[in-house]
Image (tube, rainbow, N blue to C red; front, side):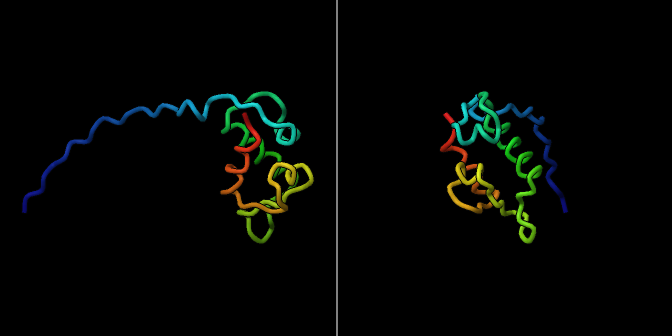
Length: 95
């Protein structure tokens, strides 16, 4: 039984997507949580997680859910969101 040998293509170095690295200005509501300076979307999400963990806002029973405090309710528009929908909700608060 003969097997065909494949040569692996050289690995390409990943380049970051420019859209993710573009600094965006947070709205006043989001700025109350992450600061008002323009930040890339990835950094905004990172700062949100720092805030969520510092204020113990992850749901104890289901860690994928985030319980919003007063500041985050203004950003999310509801008392609880999943971590997957959080990034989509942030899009309304950046320019």
